[in-house]
Length: 239
Ligand SMILES: [Zn+2]
Image 1 (tube, rainbow, N blue to C red):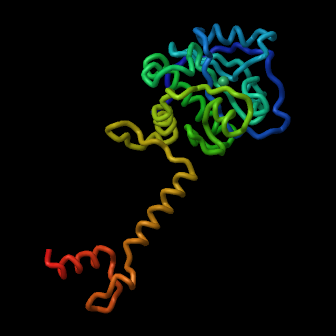
Image 2 (image 1 turned 90 degrees about the vertical axis):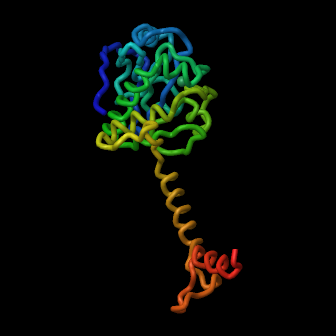
Image 3 (image 1 turned 60 degrees about the horizontal axis):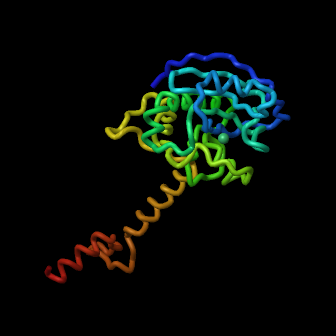
């Protein structure tokens, strides 16, 4: 999948400051909790009195506003500002259901995935999508990650209804353009820790299958596998 169509507009806000040499490791998604568009929300963020900003505002009409240069901190996530790039879905609410997200922000979600992947590459951090219940690490997550994992503040956006699988499917399609989609959509991308866990479990299961000395031996004197042993015992039991 290539770059989605969108219109990018510069709406620079004074609400920013330098990163102080911090390395960017995360891209965070936010809701507006209001009924704005990318442009109207950017207008609010341009007001110094608002004391808040994001790097990007995105809406479902395909408009992206550049509000803060990604080399600078936006004012979005307290002490996590120096290590993060922040994007707000204009007009969105954390109380939205999965269907509301898909119906009202489906296009915006794809654009957000594209912007996130570009910045992950630009700043050299992982495109792992860190969905709830969250695992700490570099990658793409949301404001609640900052609350739950980093222990900063109390915001819960983007909320329980956010379709992380849809978002991760876009990220996967952008990062692996030659991968084949499964009939039901893209598989959820596993992060490094989950891949390790999966491999460990597969190895453990493989080991359990044998061969094991305690399962008995075949005619050649070799230890039996679990399947051989069960088969032998069924034969013996004459089921
Ligand atoms: Zn937020």
